Amino acid sequence: MARLRIGSRGSQLALWQANHIKALLEQRGHQVEIEVIKTTGDRITDVALAQVGTKGMFTKEIEEALSAQQVDLAVHSLKDLPTEIPAAFEIAAVTSREDARDVFCSQKYGSMKELPNRARVGTSSLRRQAQLKALRPDLDIHPLRGNVDTRLRKLAAGDYDAVILAAAGLNRLGKREFIRQVLSPKLMCPAAGQGALAIEIRKDDAGVRRHIVFLDNDAARRTTSCERALLNQMGGGCQVPIGALAEVVNGRLFLEAVVARPDGAKVLRESGEGDDPVQLGELVGEALLRRGGDAILREVYGKAIVAPQQP
Image (cartoon, rainbow, N blue to C red; front, side, top):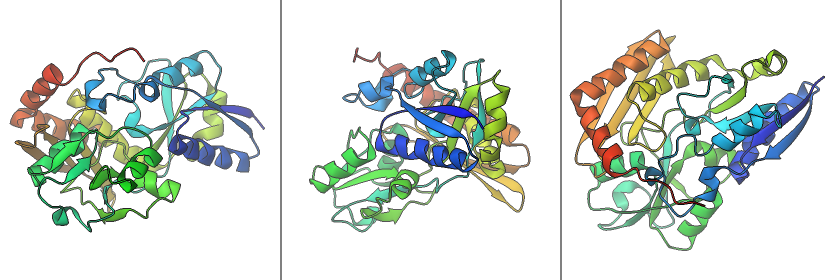
């Protein structure tokens, strides 16, 4: 059996994910170690994600370690992985998917409808901000960075009336106590790839590929490929106000997608169905661009993306 080294970020959730993959590999008889790697996104914590114009801000340093053969595979939250990865690497497996939806978390309020006017809601995601503003223009949206524990601690301290988080992370960490409402994709369309883990390897490493192929889940691969094809078609990354969720129903793919102005003043939704994941994603992405998504994204890229400060 092989000795395998996993590259991972050091947050509690990232380490849960890495340890999850480690356990599955160890069940196959492999010896596995985890190498913690600090990324640009981990160092820049005082700037909203939308204001950091660095592609691969949560993956670049891990890929450098992979290239230098310091690690043999990388475990990523797929939503953090750019749609175009360097030619030297490949996504060798997409694991069985957790709940892809977003959730409303609060100590005091049972749902988004119960929030009073001017309630303070925490998120640093333009995608979430835009959809929140479309639903409740009266809400006071404030930046919220940090790992899951940090965000929940700020909520518990009363810094926010509510925060919006991914169901997958809370489920994995067993931290569901603040969840008050699971948000329908029609209310809050999630990020492309949310809830899925991507296992990235060097493209020329057939040995490692052979060891991890059992981790690849067909439904997760098809749905996330569809969502990422839409994101790629629209030229978007993980910091832009685009949401996408594909599901397999009776063997066919159904895709819902959204692009919105950050202030929520304009929200475009599009859906489609098909059999080819990439083709469906590209068709729905093109439809959104034609309907005005291109203008929204030009505005976002022109005004919101600024050079990050040196950490």
